[in-house]
Amino acid sequence: MTNIIVVFPRPENARQIKRILMQNGFHVPAVCVTGAQALQSAGELQSGIVVSGYRMADMVYEELYEDLQPGFEMLLVASPANCKGREREGIVCLATPFQANELVQTVRMMDDSLMRRKREARKGKRERTEEELELIAEAKALLMVRNRMSEEEAHRYLQKRSMENGTGLSETAQMILSLLT
Image 1: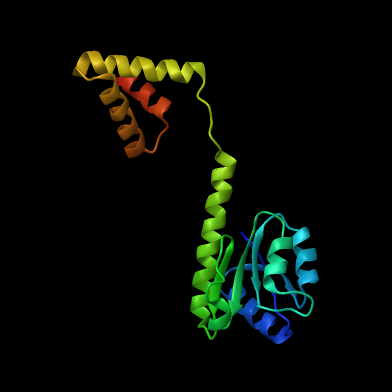
Image 2: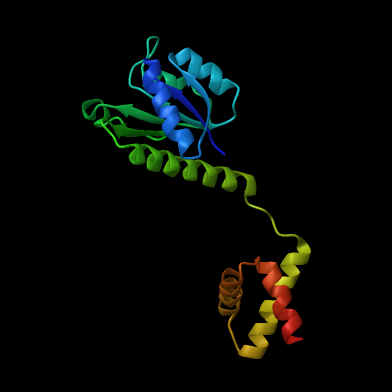
């Protein structure tokens, strides 16, 4: 679950946002009233979302965002005038006044985006082993001979079956070989 840090100069605003988020299943390990407190809390976490007001006692949201470590995104909660033209990579703006469901939906969207990026980073681009490459080549060759396909058509066929079955290309090649030989 994504960590959420709430930072607002008025503690009652921060507590209210924390309450809304926690009622909707989010994990809020820190509520802060200054940017320095938020940075300290963020330093203890690897990644997350910082829900911030426009101006704290010690800095504005842009300074806070610049000092956050990579892996954090920011939800700026500000007046429409302060939101206009403020969005940039890593910062989403929610104009006040807002409904609780707007806050929850926005944080959920940001959470989904962060989780997707984490999964992609963990996966990375995995290289196929020599054995897997041989399986794929063998399955394509068999498809080319038996079904009179070109190499490109055989490869597309393998890809399509792989996606339909939710299996890897080499696993699909293995299934085709076991079925056709």
